[in-house]
Image (cartoon, rainbow, N blue to C red; front, top):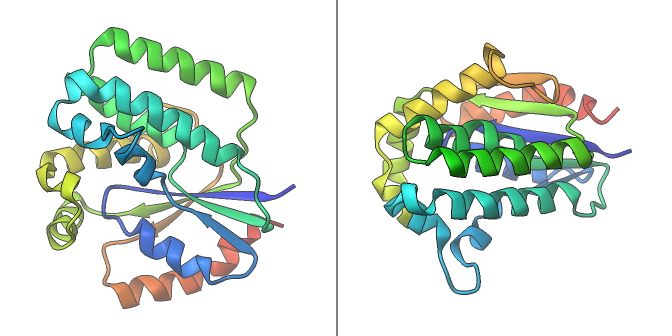
Length: 212
């Protein structure tokens, strides 16, 4: 049985840095979010469409996110430990939920996505052994977003990051809304790069212990 660790956190919480750091460990195979697929489905860019008009394209993107994340969870892995960027669970509990709560996803779209999600999780085994939650303030994420240049992210306001933050806190800290599929290791992630790398080193044993 191979261990699965999901790295969760807001947009620009430092997931990429965390994954890059652990990818240098020979026993860990890293899987990033399949963003390139979300940007190009047979020539279409549902990610950009969703940011432009979430009410129309939210379900299109999220249906595809659900498929591609399921594919990530089920893909063959060579190393003893798999470390994934986000998960099927956060796609639903954080991003679909946020579209619905903010009034940007019609109730029928939300119902259909929920039916799909419930069927998948009831019928397909999706093991997760540890969730590493990179806990950040929305303000820090917003500052970082301004500094990096991903085309689709230029339209993301602070309010959006605040609502994503609240949903993560609700799910992984207060545990008030949805089941948490694994133990959670919280790493405060508002720090600069050097401090973050130091924290990953400090937590390495705990993270790798998930595979024991």
